[in-house]
Length: 341
Image (cartoon, rainbow, N blue to C red; front, side, top):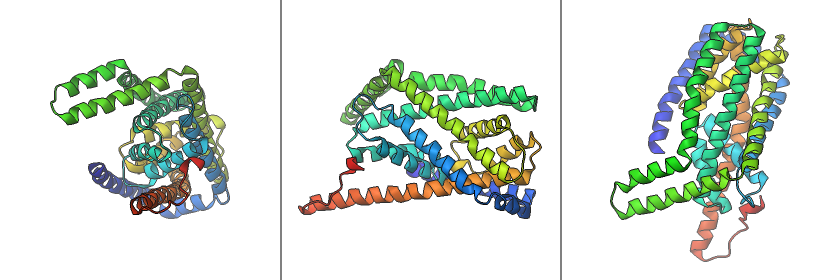
């Protein structure tokens, strides 16, 4: 995690520099006016973001097999924490997923099952995002807009498809056997413990994938979350006085999410989101200052959602430390039943 943080800080600084450069190029005064014109529409954007993150948390919760080890509210809370870490901290956009796998142990979820649920959830998000981007490309073609952008996006999806397939195969029996073979080439007691951990994670994969109905439900829920995000673009551009159809907003939202996904190594997709929105909005004759205004309103929603998530993270960590202190001191513990949250 330490190396991940150092790399993230460097890329984070580069992304901030790119945002500043694009803002100066587009005209700071024009961007400020565009953002200010949104006004009370910001509340609508925040509500839309709350809905999308809550939907994503529900999609993740559905993946847990059998009698789910944590309540829906806890899964949604952890999803907000994941969002806050991925959007606001100088870690790659998977940092929140790694930390959330650890937080699941606060609800007595076995570490292997927690890790398996996070990995499958990441795959479900990627697959539904792929379908969302494909829908955006189809809409772009139907609108008769820039054919070169549609061709480039389609080529990117063609590259992403086998990667998604490989990610799925890695979670199944072939991937299990491959990892077992690689680890078996090393000697030592630590190697056998690691093999046991790997076996437990793959047992978690099996228990998740055997429930096809829950997988299907999770996929539909995640897809509805991506579609709900279109409301952000509609609200912001409407408040700016920009006439945009639902189809055009769908194209912008779906392809900018694809850009963010491709830039997963960049904390918050800083710079990538801004450049992508300038290009995508330009296809519909939306000026660069308004495109950047849209991006910065989305960044404001990141803050509105992410800061409470980070505060929740600190509260959870504080409660865990307090419980640990009381156990060591042999004193009666405070009420720290996280399962009741």
